[in-house]
Image (tube, rainbow, N blue to C red):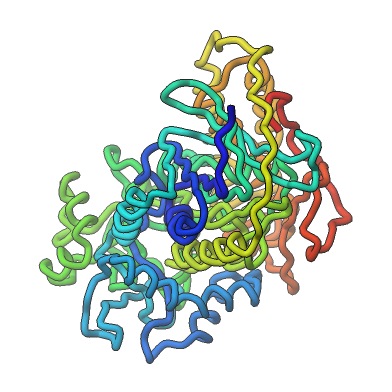
Amino acid sequence: MSKQYDVLIFGSGTAGQSMALRLADRLRVALVTKRSLADSASAWAQGGIAAVLDTADSIEAHIDDTFTAGAGLCDPRATRFVVENGRNAIQWLIERGVPFTRGDESATGYHLTREGGHSHRRIIHAADATGAAVQATLSEQVLAHPNIDIFENHIAVDLILGERVGRPEAGCIGAYVLDLLHGRVIAMAARHTVLATGGAGKVYLFTTNPDVATGDGIAMAWRAGCRVANMEFIQFHPTCLFHPQAKSFLISEAVRGEGGRLLLPDGTRFMPEHDPREELAPRDIVARAIDFEMKKRGLDCVYLDISHKPADWLRGHFPNIHARCLELGIDITREPIPVVPAAHYTCGGIVTDLSARTDVPGLYAVGESACTGLHGANRLASNSLLECLVFGEAAARDILSHPATDLPALPPWDESRVTDADEEVVIAHNWAELRRCMWDYVGIVRTNKRLARAQHRIRLLAREIHEYYSNFRISNDLVELRNLVVTADLIVRCALKRHESRGLHYSRDYPHTAPIAHNTVLRPFRRRARHPDRASDAEATPATSASSRGD
């Protein structure tokens, strides 16, 4: 028997939890997360949240900075919508009790820092662990709310569409969810389903993302018939700590914002040779500069030095970075930090409107899994949590405007034609091969030959993974691998369609930027009922086939 809710939210990051809290006073909400409530990319965010809070700053300046970073692809309406709602989003967090760092530098009473690509100090933060502070505050309130049911250790397998029960006009009516502790798949029905599952950093061998960032929402939405756009724009964070014991530890953008300098092993600065903004250039430029210097000189890493700042100041502003580096024998008050670029943020994703609605009625996408138009070809630092909050509120407002409808009974998950896996080593092998392939061929600098090679290997893996999925009982690793291979294919397909270099996509075959910017939009072959106020698409491309077990 299926469980029924008004709203089903996948993902427990800032987008998912803020939405749950905005909805739960009036609706029954299920919040589903693959691991614990605290496991999300949001919790790892160090720098802060960008918003116009100081009188010396302006809405137009924040918009201009976002446009500049986005390399001509930011949607003007979406960008203005997010920036203009930034102050309200921060005020909502303050009212919830988020302990932002105080300071006298601005009229707000809070310390505002500056990061790469920003023309003003506008990053409100909680020391150097802003995401963790936001998550802890929201989680405490989510746990206490009587109308929110939390499903930890549950992973979505696939969305359920109305056509499976003879109601194609109903759109998305829930999802199949794997209970990881008991190894069973349950059907969860909902009037509204929200994908707040984050990005797909784990598709790459080296990433700053947590292990849960496997592109689940993007892959499920694609299989359900949603358009996906701009997946070629994968942001590589310039400064991930380079140390054998430091898994995915990020050195915040704010370190460079507060005067950190990038150095070669001999202590020479190199960013002045690459961009007049030096260390404060946008992330794509800094990441390519580091990649260039490493390849040119055969280096394993470069160094980020902020030891010229007073030691007490460093410990106060970057307590977590200081403590973690010290654990590994690196004293940032006295020596530089070894760093390398790593996959950090998925700028593309599921196409949505300003209410976070996707092409499938009843289905919303919020946060990193969505392509709202805000980030364009490159996300401006600290705009990500802001997007989660603003679009989370917009989606909640849209959901609350809909009258309640009856939910149909959902068909149970069918395991009658599958058996237990005989050799699970296949999953581990394919996982490793996929991530290595993406790192080698679809990284910071690309060529047509590399992309074609990657596409060939990915499609071979996709067929093998689909066959495995169709014949054996599912597991967490299999579900994630199935989603990763779909996401990898979407990234490569978008990259092959872009015949220029723009933002995060740099091609040696097309080194110049086209005079007119266009989004790269992929459309699944299978048609779905669309919202009545949205234009239909004339173009169609094949989608990955879905298993007969789910939709």
